Image (tube, rainbow over all chains, first blue to last red; front, top):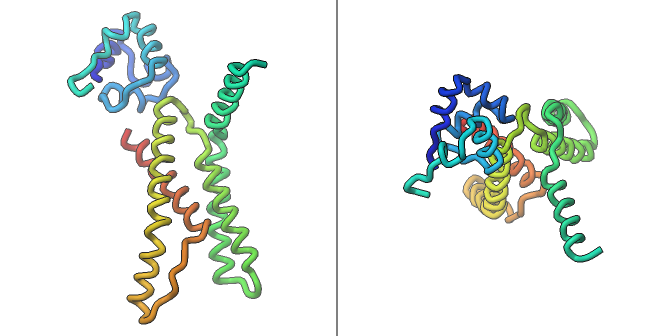
Length: 66
Length: 149
């Protein structure tokens, strides 16, 4: 799974810490998601979708390994 | 009450048990209990005379309780990733613990035979040794996984 959360975060001009606080997780979790080390749950993906005001498919993409 | 309602009730109860965690402050309490137990073990071994086997057994129990409290305590920020890492650490601790319990008695037996000619008789590990090892592995792996997340 690949994602463009870093880009979406840059568009909103918020830090990892601010994004983490908005969706109720730790900064390290956001860092791990951005680095593709952790695939978030559907709940977290929908929270991000609501915050970015975009469908989940816009910033999460299946990779060749998936 | 129909079967579906009974199953739903059981499922909710099971989820409540599996999600049980102590508040974050308990990690300090657990650490203090564990450290005090280790300190008292040294005091008992080197500075106490007489029949103190009961104290040794009591301290083993308090050490395990302290480590269990640490293991069950929530993080400052508990999210789905920490829950997932904790689950991974419990799985690793269980597997490594079983391997340890199976292999270690033979290692001890082999070493004792090499060191002392004739050696000691084969004996299984005690519950304290296995539980302490499993709790140590769980705590160690959890903190390592968190550090490298």
